[in-house]
Length: 326
Image 1 (cartoon, rainbow, N blue to C red):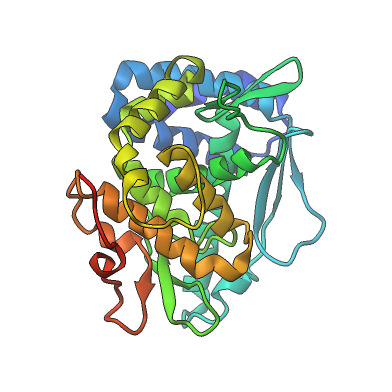
Image 2: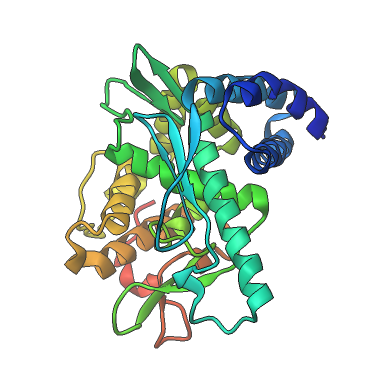
């Protein structure tokens, strides 16, 4: 385990040059400590320490200041790529939990937890940004390549990174509240969310499950060195699961590879693109993971997929898929 004092010492110069009060200093040290000790189990101590140095280097280049908003309707944390500012707002008035039967202290603790997740998510994005000549050339495991996968300022793949960062924050905090998120106004269908995410609640479960199909050691190497590992990770994944596209199931969205197809569904659901097809999007991406799991046998994977409120909280995907091609 990497001690917090090691991280504190490495952060000394960054904290001195950044407009950061003690609260955010403690929160940042806590994040890096939780992050490193989480990935250390996957990639080993030496690799984790190397990544820590890169995280701090990226912090120094990508985060210039913390800006408190004058007013906002809820707790808030959002990193702005162009200004390199992390804007935030803290309040006990968190509308997402107003209808939950909790006492005042329990609600306060939940608000603190949610704000911590929000901040961890933004920190996660910041430590994985690499810029060159004023342009972001890598954000997480994306890098400009022959397939056109690269993050733009507020671009669509930045939304994918936002979802992955949300899941990573939950992973390193060991949070999985399994909160029901209904996807239709009649409450006939729902998915489970890790926490009260306003933008990602419908797709967090899918990315959580997707991580189980990815080589997570390779994922972290791709995050750390996308030019070397990113294309390999995506290519290996597509080769392993290309049979999904050869099934007789008629996916409403079309892509040339499975990796991009999953991304496309995530973006359509998250950003409410053609929202009238939202239930179909959820059903299709659930079928993708059902097909992928034919080779993996992941237990309890069904918990992450679309559920029906009228069928004992699960859908029978074997009745949805007409033919599975080996």
